[in-house]
Length: 371
Image 1 (tube, rainbow, N blue to C red):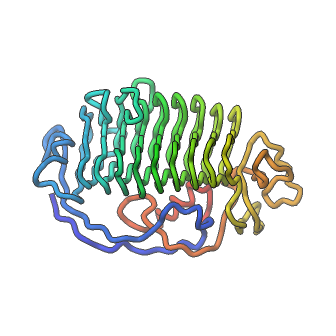
Image 2 (cartoon, helix red, strand yellow):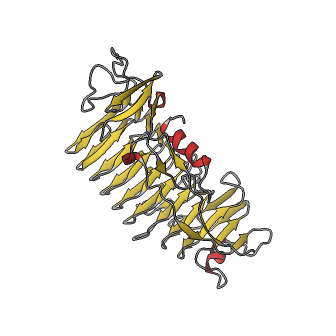
Image 3 (cartoon, rainbow, N blue to C red):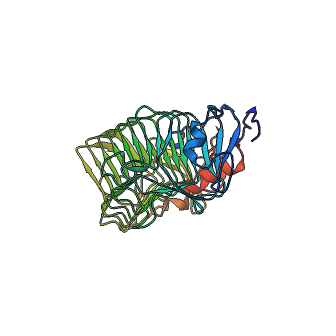
């Protein structure tokens, strides 16, 4: 165990970025880092994750490092701590001891859970997720986890957020082969879903129900039984730079308004998108400057549809003909475009505790951009 310290994160500037409306809450802040504790089945400070959380010595803001192994627990995180696996999800598993309850239930604000395989919750309710963020939690980070990966290792939902937000960051998780959805948000506000893989789920990749101000950015939703992205009653949300492939319906939106969809890729879905009783925008909210085929252009950009007529007579990267509600379809997948030239103060995108060049790389990867 060692003492932490308080420090101000380093600042960097990005000079090659996309429109500000596409950026998921990037900011600089100070954070207090507390003590570190170690969980190991072969002998550490604690032998279970729950005992580390419950210990009198553990304080808010502490980091709990978990050694490799399979931990059969239903962990309740009721204080703001950072829980990280020592060696990543490939070797560190939380299997729900009681399948009626989540592997992790988060009831506190400012919790981080990073680097675990989590499965085994199959109680047939919206809270039956590998990782469940309970009512009224805020500013939690769920990152770099594997919440379901095959028929024997899954939950009803990979990650579920209920009546929560703002400020949750759900990023770089693998949520595959779950009974219903990989990631599910219900009645939540101002959260970011970034760079996740949600494939082969029994209903859909990502589900947004009665939510507001959610940003869904740079995710891959592939080969789900029905939906890539399922939005019902969503208001003022944005889906940007995602790939929807091999689903029955790539994107479903109903009963919502003021949502924005652009720079997404639709490949080999039976139906690319279906919009019912929903007023939405299928292009960038403003004209943008971008490089396509080595030339600089300016204009609105929509989405890429692999089954669309991709004729582009003037070579500006926008097809000659519209696609349903999308008046500015892309003539190629979004990775062929670079959006450029606005300075931006960037934050810790990859969540590694530093603000550095890797954060720039993470932004670029998620948008198929070069810098």
